[in-house]
Image (cartoon, rainbow, N blue to C red; front, side):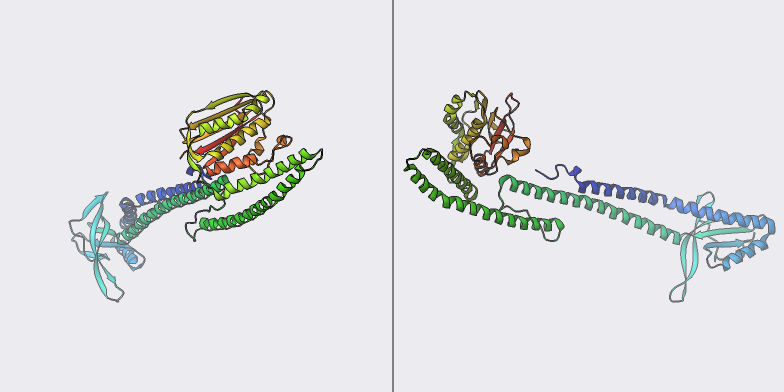
Length: 461
């Protein structure tokens, strides 16, 4: 059973989706700022500043005349923090004051609303303390006063353009970084979910098959999930060793006690005692338990497949039914058969017969007089599996204990008064595991309030 059925439902993907959504909002906002921070913004801001400056000088000229404007310009020029450029000339084009060396050429480029783009020459002091003249681009406006005096107010945009370029470049870099982070977050989420599902599938396979020798896949040694896999594998090593030790002890006990029990049975058979047959029956029951334990262990540990062949298990099922037919008739049980003919499976014929017989015996044991049993054998083309199903109208079991039915020696409370040793379905489970199959239980399909349905599902190879 996969830990996470859909990637969209995993916590990793939900977190990565939220993280990606937030990053995309940041990208959208940054893109908006990048769009606004364009040449139009630069032009509008510079135009507003120049218009405000020109408006002040026009008002000063009207109220106080040229001399006041010249004084104000000189004060501006003495201010080192001033980034405006001025050129004041009279009606005969004579220079009066300013910090521009020459009047701009006549081929200035008009932009809008009287704003011009001009090329100016500025003298700057380099790090070597040498002065050099540089050509720069500026935005300018011209105002003509009443007596033909003309003032040009300009503002260099080189520093502003560089700041704008730096902001735009930073924005583009931020967008790329955000996109990379978003993609990486999704990749990491996919990696985490895939590894978790792989670990879950392996753990589920270990639980289903009981193969404690299987281990979780370790991809590397640096990531946390690999370290978790290493820890779980170490835990599986300890569990496997403990289980093997327990099985070895129980198998040794069963093997060692079988011989003295056989001798005890022989001695009892020679006695002339009224309880002789009861004692022999108890010996047979204990020997049957030991033989079943050793049989299950042999199937689980050796996994012998030498006797495998292509067999018609329809005949195997019919043989198992024929074996119990007299007992079914003795209890007046209604038997319904649905056996598909010529169903072939690569299997151990004798072991499959044992599994079918044990399931039928289990149904017969717990079905009352005049009850019902339905036996079905067929192929499931969708899953390419063969299914053997036995339904009964017996006492049934509680859903809470269904998973325990294949455990060794487990007997439900309702079945403790019936015969048996709790090893029949454990042997069936071992046989199914050997045949890449599984045992499952559910409520019976018969029209009864109780009963159990046992399904043996084997992979067709």
